[in-house]
Image 1 (cartoon, rainbow, N blue to C red):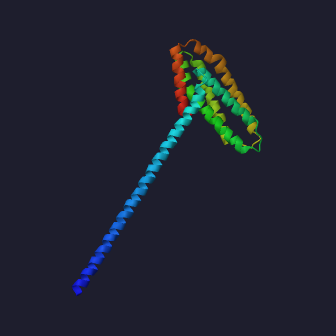
Image 2 (image 1 turned 90 degrees about the vertical axis):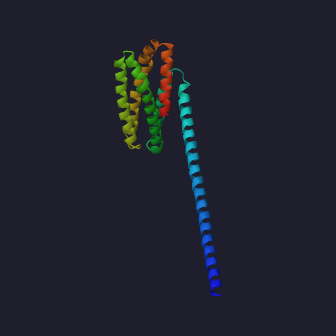
Image 3 (image 1 turned 180 degrees about the horizontal axis):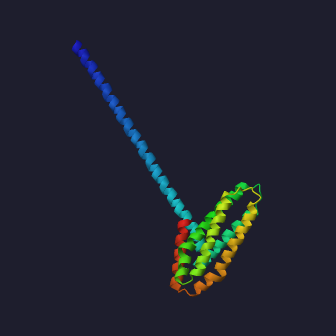
Length: 211
C-alpha cells in the first residue's frame, strides 16, 4: 500500500514538474515571440524613419535643383537666406521663441549653402586659375560662421539682437551680390556645357547631403 501511495505521489510530482516545464517553455516561447515582434517593429520603424528622411532631403534639394544651373541654384538659396533675415527683422523682443526657430533655420540654410560652394564651386574656381576670388569668398564664409555662432548664443530678447541681424544680413547680401553679379557669370562664360552640367550635378549632390 505504501508503495502504491508513493508511486502516486511520485507520479503527481513528475506531472507537476512536467507541467511546470511545459508552462515555463510556453512562457519562454511567448516571451521570445514578444521580443521578436518588438525587434521587428523597431527595425520597421527605423526603416520608415530613414525613408522619410531621404524623402525630405529629396524634396528639399529638389526645390533648389528646380532653379536650374548651379549658379541659379545658389542664387535661389541666397534669396531664401535673405527672406529668413527679413522675417527675423520683423520680430520684436517678446518673440524669443520665434527668433530662436528662425536662427536655427538660417543656420541650416547657410551651412548647406556654404557646403555646396566650398566643396564644389570654389575648388572649380581655383582649377580655373581664379584662386583670388575663391579665397576671398571662402574667407567671408568664416565671418558668416562667426555671426551664426553669435546669433545662436545671444539672448533672443536682447536689445543687441536686431542690430546684429542687420549687420549680418548686410554681409550676406554683399557676398551674394559679388558672386551673382561678378564672379559666377565670368566663371560660367568659360565653362563648356559638359563642365557646367557637371558642376550643377555636384552642387545638387552636396546639397542633398546637407538637406
